[in-house]
Length: 462
Ligand code: 4AD
Ligand code: MG
Image 1 (cartoon, rainbow, N blue to C red):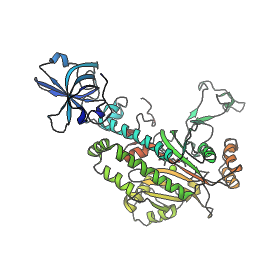
Image 2 (cartoon, rainbow, N blue to C red):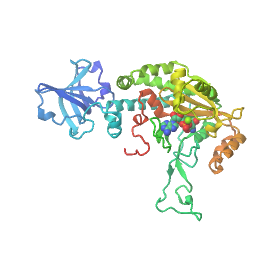
Image 3 (cartoon, rainbow, N blue to C red):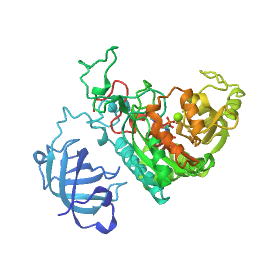
Image 4 (spheres, protein in one colour):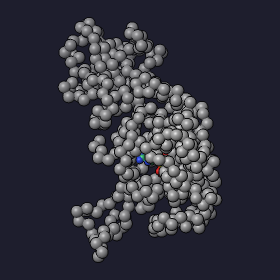
């Protein structure tokens, strides 16, 4: 008989039919007349209740059915007697695929802390919480592709191994095949990278943007969606060393078009989760965040506030609030500043634009004031910065001047400059940190809990 997934079983039309279900045992309880097993197969947050009539089975038969064991049950789907369940399976026969020793199985009990579960990252997908988060994450990934594909954007795969540092922050993971205990040296004692795999120093990418611009100035509109690596030693609830980023890049776009796209994009993803992940969001709301669904709904209803960095700094300086890091025009905003603007001042998402050029990357378009660039950061409640982007400097001479000013080696940049040399066009784009979106949508508070296998300083076990 064909297996039915638990997500498909709660269907009145199936009542009375023989079914075959498979899954992992969440709990077993009961008495000498009847035993109840809650079975979950990952297809939904909901468990199916399996009822064992102890006239047909013995205690010895059921001995191996313990929390965490895996089971195949054949039986009849019947309307449920118990409250809260619509149907259950009356078992006729069963088979245990694999046992889980109750003395050893780490997820024996309910209610483990998220910290404990981080130490058990290899098994935590089997919990309700991580099942819900991972299903929402998957749905959001699908929404990302759907949004861009419906709008005629092309999915571009940019390289993970690169010789250039897009963001100029220098926080890159080096990639090499050289023997670190026996490095070839030049006469001056420096490492001879001509002997390395690529014949020069390379690293894991911090962003696909530069190559994304090559795609956008050919295909018109592209998006990337891939892993991104940053070796910054920031142990915060919002930073990962390996995260996923979505980077759309569009030719003939200015900063206003870019802001519209960013706002539509986030709202589309949030709405998709509300429409398609209701059970999981309700579970997460009940367990972790009682305002979750209303916050998601208000985020798609409201217009994001748009203002300049300069205006934002004014508001912060006049706020009368004592910040840990003082605010002054020219300094980068800290998470506490971003969250003040969003959570306390405006009480909705904010897009800040036109930052001082000194605190932003080299590729951003210079404004006429000569001091600020056409940058945009989208700031979200609970999260802070969720998107960073800009209109790009399309003028060859100005871009070259900026690259020279910052001492970026031309050997890394000549190919990028060619986009401005041959048929340059105004264009813009942004990067959305996928895990930050998943954080917002699930209401989780630590980014380590929204990626299956987090990579952070000193943590690459699973
Ligand atoms: O602001 P960032 O550094 O911008 C860029 O990389 C641009 N090249 C994007 C573009 O214009 N195409 O990063 C973009 C977003 C941030 O807003 C944040 O959401 C996320 O990426 N992000 C991180 N997420 C998790 N862990 C980290 N260490 C992150 N660093 C950035
Ligand atoms: Mg940024």
